[in-house]
Figure 1 (cartoon, rainbow, N blue to C red):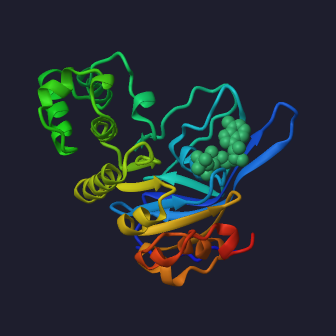
Figure 2 (cartoon, helix red, strand yellow):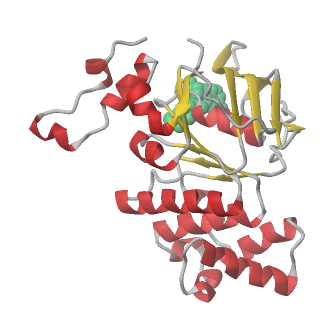
Figure 3 (spheres, rainbow, N blue to C red):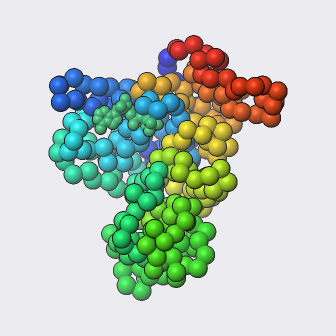
Length: 291
Ligand SMILES: Nc1ncnc2c1ncn2[C@@H]1O[C@H](COP(=O)(O)OP(=O)(O)OP(=O)(O)O)[C@@H](O)[C@H]1O
């Protein structure tokens, strides 16, 4: 099914993806298609969610954009008719290559405890990113404090000295967002940034990402299993099914105007107050047969 591409700003998109295919080649030589023909634009200041069941290709798509898919372990083939960030082509790297982040991109990973260096104080980790962006010394110390405040952390001097394991899960997630933003990205990719948080912290983290995207004028590509949170906090939702972007639509209209049966099934499975009379929530198999 051809995805419905919503009318978008005709200005040059920050992220332009046309016909992106990603295959993992297994040791036996077979090529496993993980993303097939993905096509979409993302503009500065726009927030897009990628949703879909486990294994549908969301992370593969997002990491291909950020240049972090190259791996020593897996032979990854990335081809695209066009794949650019801020007008510059993303150069796919082959087997054994050290992943190199696409300039202008930053990633917030699911598990801050694994993504941050566990034995390095937060201030040093922020300082390394700022040094990479050309900010050092006193200016870097000021910038580190600024970014921790921007993500809503208090007692900044304590947080700067703390190791990640001395902070709560919600604080670590905010530190990771600060580290990602300190490098001045134009595109922020967040891979399930809320899945390790409880419901109220998850909502707070999404609100923070929304606010920062707007105020910094950057684009946000967020992967999530929480379609309700995505509908509330993004402009566009892309639905992935078996490696294909089967639907792409304005978040505000997706619930009523879903075209693909899988999207309708996802929306149907969101619990509402009207479900109070039901004993069981419907499963995907209940509301839509496999497309
Ligand atoms: N390094 C790899 N080597 C081989 N196959 C891989 C590799 N990484 C992912 N895959 C396969 O590619 C497909 C897409 O995986 P991907 O992780 O992108 O999906 P996802 O939608 O992000 O899943 P989840 O929601 O569980 O994170 C899956 O079939 C997965 O098994």
